[in-house]
Image (cartoon, rainbow, N blue to C red; front, top):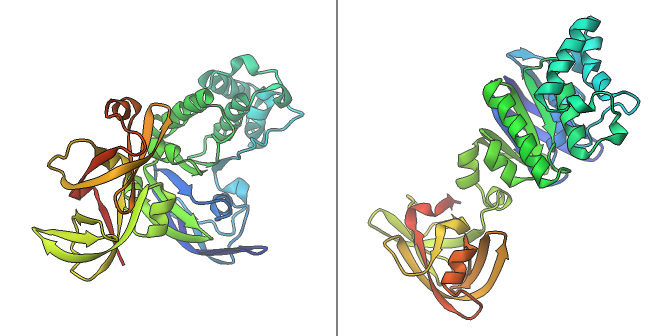
Length: 349
């Protein structure tokens, strides 16, 4: 559906450097990375607002590198909504239809359907300056899809919304992708949005494509330490394979020894990645690794408790707040951590 073929693009001192990625029809594709990484630049290049210095952009199998934005058939929604302040909601949504030459009665019928679809019919005659952030976002989304694009580009659409409005908007986006088959490309900083919505994703850091692929694979089995850190894996530990045992590698991470599933031979430097919810405090089980330590800190956040444990190296475990309280976990309390060998992702140097 969308292909960037070795695209490089310079904007002032910023360089998007030789980025190639493929977005399939029906994907909910996320572009993630730190601020200033080039995420929005990629989105705007797809939309036709920037022309690459090198490389090609293809939409639906056809090269569009030199094609102007209005001929690309994509919808673009910015974080700041970009509604026309002097137009009512109904006129904002119908703007693209009028530009396309749709007649008045047909355009009114289309806009009325969208007002109902997004639950904003009561806002039809209001102006953007009188709307809440969530209302503006729904109007901006309705305006973007009024012209029936098969590609929708979203630049951090949820970042300015309150949690309740975010949930409603997420439902709208899921419906457009799963029920209507709309291909969506979204820029975000939020790992939660990625986990809820993404089918595939790309990680961009300093203008370079670090990794792309199935969202579950990138989130849970990244290929580099840098990507592992960005996608939020809490325990990233450098070590050396000291021996092999029963198909597993025994890895020394600064005095703490863990078994992990990998083909790495003895003597190889590796990085172990362990998500906090794959570490179980409490009675040792048959999980492959039992590690003794002392609780350093317990931080509760909503229903979840993050438990930091000194095991020679610090490990971070996550559990329900209730479970942490039932185990009487507090600073200075000894605890045993159980970690399944198969839950440890190994990055080989």
